Each structure stands twice: as C-alpha cells, then as structure tokens.
Length: 95
Image 1: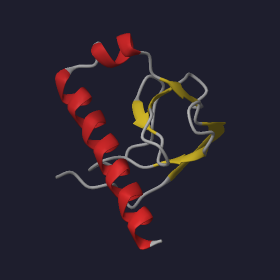
Image 2 (image 1 turned 45 degrees about the vertical axis):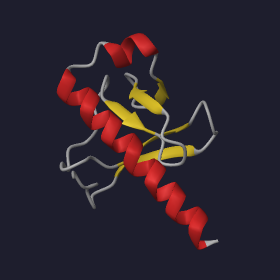
Image 3 (image 1 turned 90 degrees about the vertical axis):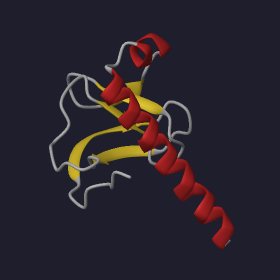
C-alpha cells in the first residue's frame, strides 16, 4: 500500500468545505512533489476529496471532476481517502 511522504509543503490556508478543518500543508503519496493547480487531494480530517485551485487553496471536487480523473489518479485518491478514514478510526479507538 502506498505511504504518505514525510515531506510537508506549506500551501495557502483554506478550510475543508465539509468539516471546516484548516488546510495549510500538503504531503504526497509516495512522492515529495509540491502540489500544483488541478492536483487532487483529501482533507486529512474527514477524507473529503479536494482539488488545488490556481492559488493552491483547496475546494471540494465535484462528482464530475472525480469521474473524469484518469484511473490511476482516481485509485490514488480512493486509497488516500481510505488511509485518512483508517487513521480516524484508530484515533477514536484510543480515546
């Protein structure tokens, strides 16, 4: 299974449109690349699929945008969402 990079890149602050979590850093899966406009991502708090805008703030991806991702990118997005959800379940069990 892919792993999340230890390298974090600062991005302009935005907030998850679903849970309101502050988004100001980015990490790649199996890459240390900086995000670029149009790249997909997920909220680290709730796993909402997001997309980087021209100014590198994030907004929710539309279902059409998700459907139009190439199969490899869509699979990576789905894996990232699963990783975040599994981290959330682990946090809840430790409480």
